[in-house]
Amino acid sequence: MRINARLDEEQTRKVNFLKEATDSSVSEIIKHALDQYYEDIRKTQINTIDLLRKTGFIGCSEGPSNLSTTYKEKLTKGLKSKHDHR
Image (cartoon, rainbow, N blue to C red):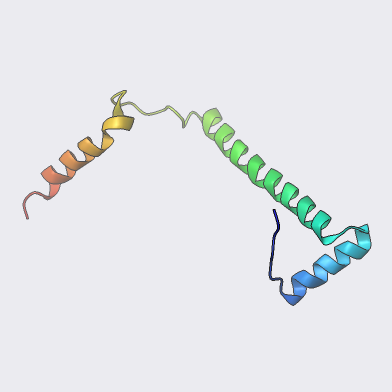
C-alpha cells in the first residue's frame, strides 16, 4: 500500500531527525511508528477487557437470556408506556 501524507513543519522536522539518527528511510520510520501505535492500542483494548473481567463487571447483571435479540421490542414497549400520554 502506498501512503501519501501531509506533514506540518514540526512533524517534518521529527521525520528528518529520525532519518538521520537511525539511518532509516521514511518508509521504515512510518512502518515502525505504525507497528508501535498498533501495539499500544491493542494493549489498551486487551487491558480494558481484562480489567472488566477481573472486576466482575462483565456478566454481572440479571435479565432475560435472549435480551440481546429482543431489546428493541422491550425498549419500544417501555417507551410507549412511559410517553403514551402525549
